[in-house]
Image (cartoon, rainbow over all chains, first blue to last red; front, side, top):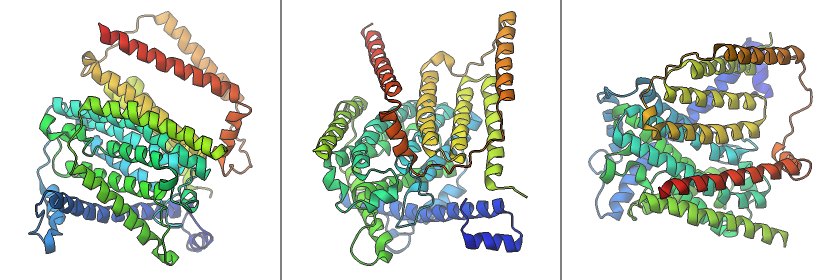
Amino acid sequence: MLSSAELLNFANSHGIPLWAMDAFIAALIALGLFAAMGLGFMVQVYMERKVSAGLQLRYGPIYVGPKGSLQLVADALKFITKEDVFPSSAEPWIFRLAPVVMFAAAFLGLLVLPFGPGLVAKDLNVGLIYVLAIPSIGVAGVIMAGFGSKNRYAILGSLRAAAQMISYEVPRSLSLIGIIMIAGTMRLSSIVDGQGIWYIFLQPLGFLVFFVATMAELNRTPFDLAESESEYVNGYHTEYSGMRFGFFFFAEYMSLFAAALLTAVLFLGGWHGPGPVILAPVWLLIKVFGVIYVLMWVRWTFPRFRIDQVMDLGWKVLLPMALVNILVTGIIMSV
Amino acid sequence: MDVSISLVIFLALAAMAIISSLMVVVGRNLFNAAMFLGAYLLVIAGFYFLLSAELVGIMQVFVYVGGVVVVLLFGIMLTSQMINVRLVSALQQRVLTLVVVAALVGLLVSIFSKTSFYYISSAEAPRDSISLIGKLFMTDYVLPFEVISVLLLAALIGAVIIAREEGRQ
């Protein structure tokens, strides 16, 4: 499946069975992605703390390491060594599996995202639908977390989160149809190649709908009804602590990174930029962290919506806007 | 020896499909049954990927796992009497059940015996299956496509009407 001719020869000459070779390569890619995400996680959490502190005229972490940059290492040690609290009324297997499902959904979403020309684990020709479909497994994880905890706050939070994620999946998917129409493909690398002009300029309305829907999909403020601390403790992960909470935390920032990467690939010209090809991943990363910065900026600037406002925005504003975008794109393309 | 990774994956998926579908039927907890149904539908998506039918596999995840199973879980959680209930079903219509089961088994056996499992198409999987499918939807299969659209629209309107009537009471 993955083997090239050289690897095939190597396997034959050393008597390694083909399936073991394939499995080894797949495991290697998964580990590489995991390591990259771990690094990205640390950078993002540090960035979130510093950005939020800057916007609120605070210092943020300053004690651990230079300018507080090793704070997350200390936090990770705390997560790992903390007591594993297990609520006595929880459903044992559902409670245990929920963080795994969330994590797996977030991790699987990265599989088709290109990090540079040719730098992609699997360049599916249905890549665009894939990145939209995989987060819906995460919805099941949210419901599992709420139901498994057997806690009223957790159940309410999980129902809200799931309702919100399902509602915003619709405008989010529809807002990208304009891009599919212009690019004529759903392969993410081909979409990047086709961007002589960035699609943000050709699809401004589509970008607006996609960006707002992405914020809602990530459950970040102003859409953080799922874990609104002032209303019900912490939403669906109220009962989780220690490393189990760490998994939710990791999955959340992995989804954030994936969403920012998808935005950069679809609307901001992906890895295009001046300079030699070797700089392509650098340009992409600059764009990704720019998008992440904007998302954090929004998060720490605006207050939270009410649940009815969230639903109204999704169904009565974003959905018609996405449909109008498709219509306008179609008319302009046929003229 | 012809052990490829596809065979290993196929056997693993097949085992998971059998176990999870059994758990759906045997389990007494409705929430667990719905979870196993979700797992089973994911495994089916895995089969589609294995056969390089990526579009069908992704649609399986999108529609069944992301849509049907989540709505099922919603229904279970919003029906307060359904949480924590161990369903105990007694066999009440013994004769009818036997007839239906026998008919189903007969149907499956007849299909099984008629299918030849050793036919594998030598043709390459089409490289750009999406545009092919899109073209077919708009030409040869335009009537079923439109009929399904109308059906879905009717279901949508029906759901809105039912929801409004409940709101008024």
